[in-house]
Length: 373
Image 1 (cartoon, rainbow, N blue to C red):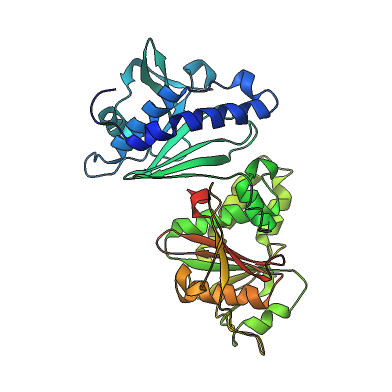
Image 2: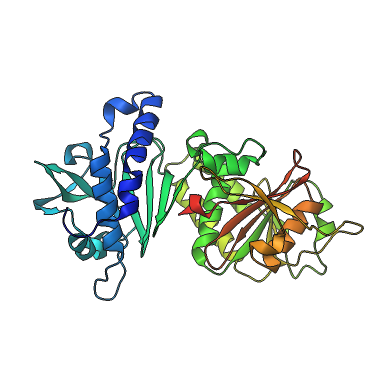
């Protein structure tokens, strides 16, 4: 490598080498089939991706994904006759051809140098992947399972800040199943409730308008105490297409596309001013609803705030410190409706899951946007 170095890449390379090796060794058959990079290769991949993220190609910022594997480990690989050097300018020039989701630039050794040998859509579980999401913003991740399209984030590089994700919730916290699925997606199937809500969260964040999704127990009416009347966009009968699509997904090859389509449609409703209301059986009840404080309930003054990164220490803060009235109303809803969960997307990309913590006897605000990148 020539030119300036990205200090964060060198500082974290050895730790990431150890983490990937441990994850692969812990999984049955993982360590014997997955090519893993050493610290030097990790540093080179992250360094090249970082400097490429700061360049522009015809006015556009690069969006690329680098996967460390030899071409023979990639199914249906597109191979270049003359591999390209792993440098930032070469990556920026290739970016327009590979910016669509699911396409990775394959990187492997040629002699002592790392080169880009082509592209692939299929990579082994635990293969080291670096994705460029924006200027100075990188995510290190790996596939969850061979039979899954999901990826698990391992670290996020943002300028000189690096966050290593924790696979375990803080000891003093008792997060909902939703957050547990975020922290350990390999434990959730493609169609269970936590996986579906994760897909909704990603889509809510992607539309960039901000929004709130309230998830309440099916078959109860207690949530009405916390919703202002009249409900302008009430749905009757409840819209159950997401649940129906999930039931079909287990039995039909192409039903996954049906679920994705409904998820996008429901996430789009959260862009309407107000909150979207859905049961834990995926029945849409209303959207654009206004959250109010239930009768005789105190105002929520404090919440526990945590982020699933190593070294995070949960703190007690005012809900207004999290982002304004949208976050305050979501915290109030969960404070009053303790069986409910509120997912809140901010326009700036932040994402918070509010859930009641019986252990702390307080609303817990889980900042999880780092898991949705």
